[in-house]
Image (cartoon, rainbow, N blue to C red; front, top):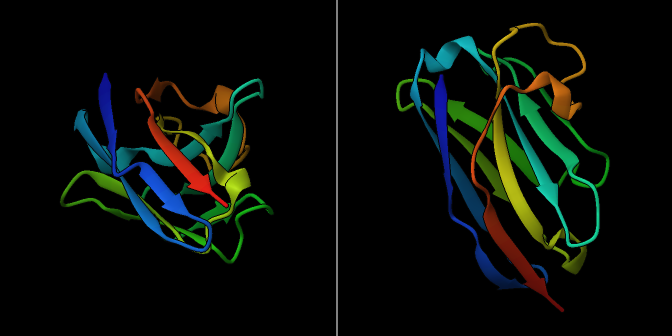
Length: 126
């Protein structure tokens, strides 16, 4: 079992920045690929970014590429999502998730992740 707790959400104006954190506890953090997803009201959960176990690989949704950066600190059992140049359409609840399979495939699919945090709200005003 892995427990995930997100933090760092809040309200910002368009063009602003936020950094989300996701602290993991339980099993060995470095065994998991980690992902960030988001869900806006009335919409399906969508992929944002993923990072491999070592941090050597990352993958982004086209909608956030060049604006968001995912990173991890295995010594601190934490994954981060740095969000710059935020837009109103980035408004959503953001979730981190852990994939125990280790394989770097389909990392943009929710079914690949066994463990999820409770989410943190990000609101971007125009």
